[in-house]
Amino acid sequence: MDHSNHVRLSSAELTPSILEGASIYGADDHKVGKVDHVHGSGPSSVAIIDVGGFLGIGAKPVAVPLSDLEFMKDGDGEVHAVTAWTKDQLKEMPEHHH
Image 1 (tube, rainbow, N blue to C red):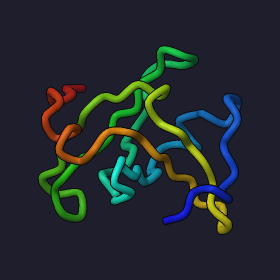
Image 2 (cartoon, rainbow, N blue to C red; image 1 turned 90 degrees about the vertical axis):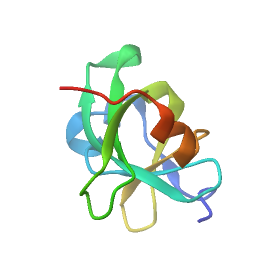
Image 3 (cartoon, one colour; image 1 turned 90 degrees about the horizontal axis):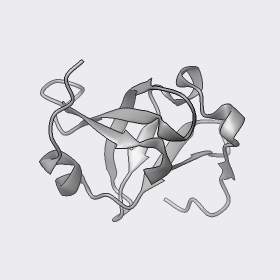
């Protein structure tokens, strides 16, 4: 997916209601997971990303700093993010417990 023409979200748009459900694309531009929910606010916020599984079953929740994710909207207004993390790297992270 070419993200170069997608509109980056401003810091004011980085709210749980906008980010929850956003697809996450990894370093290899493959979908690696989706945002389940967001903890905190401001620069110390973390996104809880469901990684792996199939249709949400068996997915592992991991915490990733929002600063590691570049959120944007595509031409249809769908919010998604790009990260330097790969799916394998995310799967190796400790599981986030609520």
